[in-house]
Length: 193
Picture 1 (cartoon, rainbow, N blue to C red):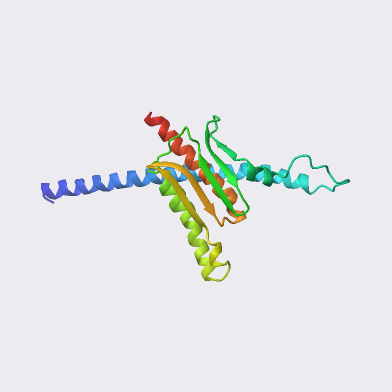
Picture 2: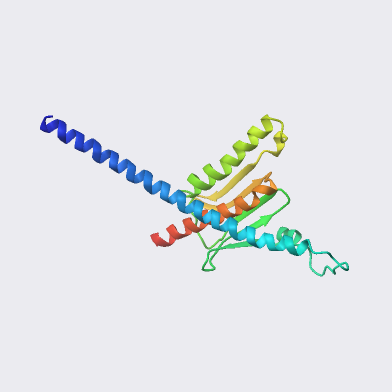
C-alpha cells in the first residue's frame, strides 16, 4: 500500500470516528431522555396507585364535597409545570380531550433549541398523530378524533402549544415529555447566558 493510500485510509477512518462520536452523543441524549421519562412515569404510577387504593375503600357515608373535583379545578386554573429547583416553565390547562401549554412569560424558549423539534414534535406529537391516522384507517377511531396540535410562537420564541383529541391514556406520557423537553431547553438557555 502506497503512502497516499495509507493517508487516505487514515482520513476515512478519522471521518468514520467523527460520525460515530456524533451518533453516540445523540444516542446518549436520547437515553437520558428515556431514563427521565421512565422515572417520571414510575413516580406517577406510585402516586396514582395510592390514589386508586384510597378510592377503592368502601365508603360508609356520602362525603361532603366542599371543593370541586380536581378535573374541574384543573380546567379553570393551570397546573404549574416546574423544574426540580422550582422555576416555573409553563402552565398546563387540561380539558376533557385537549391540553393547552402556556409557556412562562419570563422565559424565552427558542423553538430551535433541542430537543423541542427533534424529540417533542417529531418523536412524541408526530408519532401519536401517525398512530391515530393508522387507527383511523383501520376504523378503530373516527377521522375527526386524530390528534392535532398547534404551536404559537412570537418570532422564534415559543408561547403556547395546544393539543386536541388527546387520548386519556396518552396524557401522562405527554406531560412527562413536555416537562423533560422544557427542562432540557431551560438548561441550555441557562448555559448560554
